[in-house]
Image (cartoon, rainbow, N blue to C red):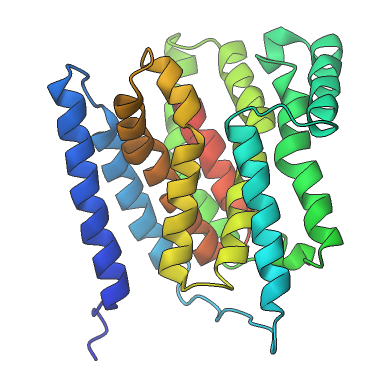
Length: 285
């Protein structure tokens, strides 16, 4: 087999993804919505290629002998329920009370000029990380298998994902296009409101569970699709109730980002790089 050969499963997912990406873009253009995501997708592709280069070779997956599949399915179900509750803001007894208390605590204690939405800066970490992390530990998961292990070539991968953002931030601040406080507010807000906490929920929790139940390509694909659909409610509001347009944006924006961050997590075996990449890309807008 040639060193450049790509497994059929990866090729099927790639070409299927390209087809869906094109259809979604055509629909958005047909309704007069100009899609600006192609440039970001190409930028992602370049950084993924560079990540592959600096993280080679990838250590083999650590699969425990006689792993309890029932336990894994229960963990996956619990994480899926957390994703549904948070994605659609469902009112669930006890859960909603905890989130509301966390939100109010953030609003009362954190300065809005630095944290943007101070309530979410406390509520999101609680519902995306604290609660699901505790639940997974109770159900038998280990921190090292949830993205908190040693990692693979983490420093080199960080350089790949931070090089351009750092240059851009310096230019923006030095030229006056973005005041330093605005940049810091973006970084702090994204750090606390999504960043690591979304990466834990979808990559550290969901992707690692799926990767033990299905093949790696499908684990990456499923978590990316779920990550995209998780934004459907917010995208629908942004598109004034047009659910098809919202779905198209989910597919060409958040699903692509989810797949890329998931692949970076797969290569580095640690949540640091996808979390930093997530914050950096959101802060660049």
